[in-house]
Image (cartoon, rainbow, N blue to C red):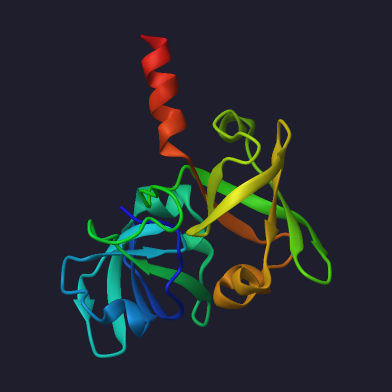
Length: 195
């Protein structure tokens, strides 16, 4: 489990195509501090397991389901990714409960910068907006954010300067695909209501 508070930006160093899977090597620093083999690290909101590691990198295996459901299939050498270690039970929950289980992808449709913040519109499948509420939590590329507005096929977020500089969202462009994880509590409520 994660909180959506990005600890650092990493860089994809290599991607090895294994046919129905990928082996991804990511250059990192802070998230490696206490991440042994088997540890979970959120990579653009995707919970990946450390399969190998060195002093300044780690490797993770990415299965076909992850490639199908996330934007990681479109990553390339040099891509900047948001990184976060798994949450500790004795730490503050700075963002919201994030599983690292991406529900789908969205496409950046508009970016409106202003002097103090930037508003981003993200187009998403209608089945994802069913779990969103105005001022509710959303995870975009692993970043815990607040939904500003919502429609049937898109939502908007407002990014402060810190988010723009400390995450890869500051370098995103119109047309870029991002990973979306809706609030897991909404999914559980729906499941209980169906009974």
